[in-house]
Each structure stands twice: as C-alpha cells, then as structure tokens.
Image (cartoon, rainbow, N blue to C red; front, side, top):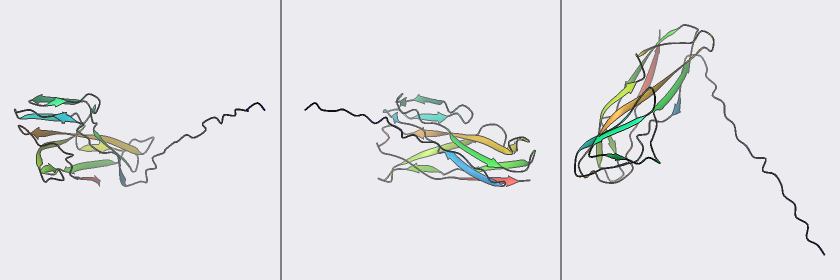
Length: 153
C-alpha cells in the first residue's frame, strides 16, 4: 500500500502592538551594553542614545554577534504637550557573584524636554550610557535597574 505524505503549512505568526494611554510612559526596550571581552587594561563600552551604536576602547573588545542596543521608551499625552524626562542612573552594574562595573553615565537622545507629537499624540526617546570596565574584569552577567520619569507640563 503506498504511503501518503501530507504537509501542513506553518501558519503560526506573531504580531504585537504598543498601546499608549495619555500621560503614560512605557519601556519598549531595555538598555543592553552587549557582550564584551576585558583584558589586563581598563577600558569602556558605550551605547549611543540616538543611534544605539556601540563603541569601546582601552582594553575592551566587543563581541560583534552580541552588540547590545539602546534603551527605548514611548509615552503619550496631549498634542504639543511638553514633557521633561529624567533618568536616575545606578552607580554600578552588579553580577550574581557581587562583582561590579561602574556606570559612568546614562544619557538621553537629545534634550530632556520632549514634545508630544500633534498627530500621533506620542513621543519616543532612547537612552544610552557608558560603563567603565576594569582590568581583568571578572566574567558574568552584570545588571541593574534605573528609574525613568516623565514630568508632563
């Protein structure tokens, strides 16, 4: 008896939507400095708040397959409303082994004063930063949280 072959096309797909309610602030993407390789020299890694591009220097080498990305946020409000965005950065990133990486700065893309778009009633901004990587920095996944606030004027 001949065997019959049947294939079922893959119909699974996913989609997503961001719903912004007036006077809200929503995290779209976390800030991620990517994977780096330290050396016997101190160095740094930075993420550009506007473009998300990563740079590094000193004794730090970046792993190209894990480049990280900027943090990205969205908010909504009244058309043309002014919003002041502030960041409360952590002092350090901390590994599960309690090793630390100093956070030199967290930065916004552009000025802290944002304007709600008159058509979409939304505003968006990126967050970047700079980390100081120590000589022979211990391996591990380092993390911290930080607060982002929007003061609607």
